[in-house]
Image (cartoon, rainbow, N blue to C red; front, side, top):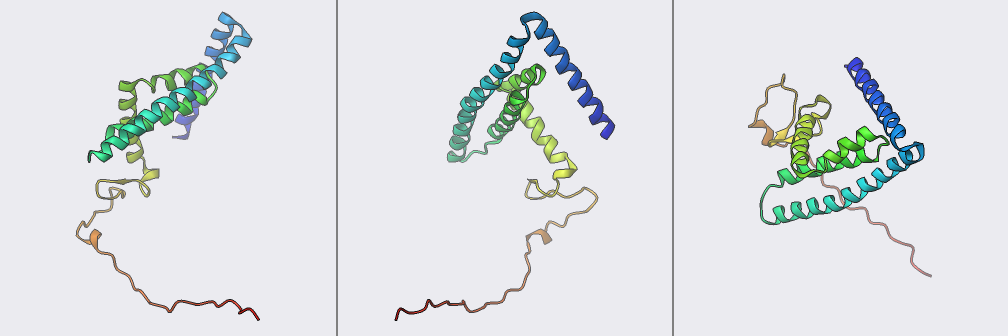
Length: 166
């Protein structure tokens, strides 16, 4: 798996350098660097504007008693898109910009959430479907999941008295 990450990282670096060279040859070095800063500012503005719209939609859906599943998927895609827009590079900016388009944003957000739920690194921290996510090799006993056992001991409260004024 580490080799696959290395290959992806090398291809991504090659694509970013090729995009820098192409844009630099077309408009010049100074405008190429200014373009990187400009796309970061656009990304922050889009994230602020569309993030507030999604947050208001989540509030409205929760107030109406609906599950805000698509809105949460949108917010995940917006967060990833905002991060990609802040990373210097024209390829990451293009991918981040695609994640701000509403239809693509929802599909990508659902895919990202499913990837998180399936990823073994998050099995202990992601709560899906009424129980804690566990590795598939361990059978679940749903009747025993509702029982919480423990011992308690009541102790008298410690009172601290301040010294009295004399």
